[in-house]
Image 1 (cartoon, rainbow, N blue to C red):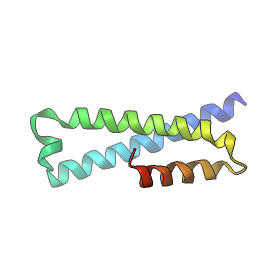
Image 2: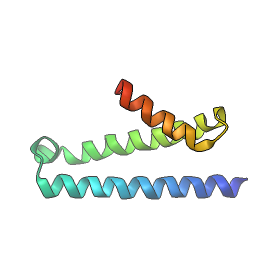
Image 3: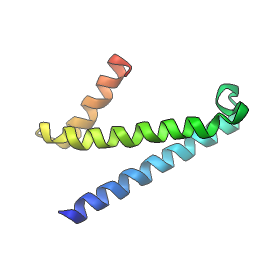
Length: 85
């Protein structure tokens, strides 16, 4: 069981780091001033990384409440779309 959680964590972190790298690439490519000026980019990356890691943890905790684990992820995404939290 420990191997499963280690692999799940490694996969989640790998996907999150890939998404953050893509985000940085897009922000740098388009030069969005509010994100790239005055050294704001490291702060934005830190906030996005923290949010994504917390969301991954919340989904892993919530999946125990559903009969199908993927429902937890879909429910979390829909809740976020509806409430913007």
